[in-house]
Image (cartoon, rainbow, N blue to C red):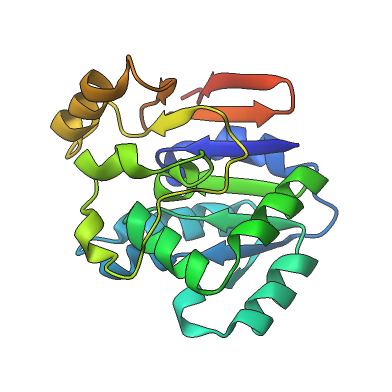
Length: 205
């Protein structure tokens, strides 16, 4: 297993490029669903453009708009999945509605190239409830449990010191740092998760 988790996809171009060089094909399934309930989604467009600039072909799939069989077929066959940021609780709700958590877990453990940005990074932990300071969980009215994909035994705190999340990221850190193992990152850092542990990488400017 080897996955990349970051706050801001467009801010980690060189690290992402190196990671994706392992791919045989040039096709990525890109899931922007977490942004459906956000007023600002410019970071999604920036992430898409960054991946395209590296020569990758993106199949953009909003999981809220397709049925379970179609999604399972797509996610089973692709070599790389990228899930971008937005509301973590809404994202988890939509993944659970289509019964995709188990499939994601299995595929990542098998060696799928996975990239998670912000919400897409947070769902890799065991439980996402700690992110309630940064994201409004009431938006996901159909979500009845907060269990994540559970392939990373730590908890990502994205956007540390970054506008407009300075206060909520810091408050999350202050509230939970003695309760669960947090890994805070800014917009130019990436957590490389491997079977034996993780490393925080910094984008060279």
